[in-house]
Structures are given as C-alpha cells and as structure tokens.
Image (cartoon, rainbow, N blue to C red; front, side, top):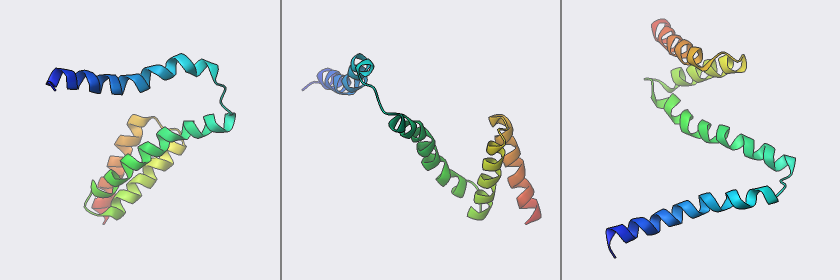
Length: 99
C-alpha cells in the first residue's frame, strides 16, 4: 500500500464523520436538556486542559490554585480575558513577593 493511498483512506475516514452530519442535522430536533448538556462540553474540556497547567506552571501548586481561584473570581465578574490573564500573572508575582 503506497503512502498516497494511505493518506487518501485516512482523509476519507476523518472527513466523512464530519461532513455527513451536516446533511442530516436539520431533520433532528434535540431536546433542550440535551442542548444545554452540549453547551457545557467545551467548558469541561477547557477545564481539563487548563487545570494541570495551573498546578505545574509555578513552583508551588498552592500558588497555582490561588492564581486559578483569582482568575475564576475575575471571570465571574466578567472582566475581559486580557485583564484576567494580566491580573492573574500579577497576582502570582505578588504572592511570590509576599511568601
């Protein structure tokens, strides 16, 4: 089997599941509770990806957890993302200075 045929097969296997639902999605009516569940998937996935980074980005996991809590509080108050990042980094440096 040549490399080109392998690439074409892998392309078809990856593209078909992504394109076919587009033609059928208009025919299905999903319940509201299912749509609400689907809306939370990106948040959960982002949390799984970000949490280990918070723990290991600084010297102590406690500092990372405190920085994550500070960022979450800023997010609850709907502070723009740029300021959440900058203020959280400043908060971590402030913690390092205090500790």
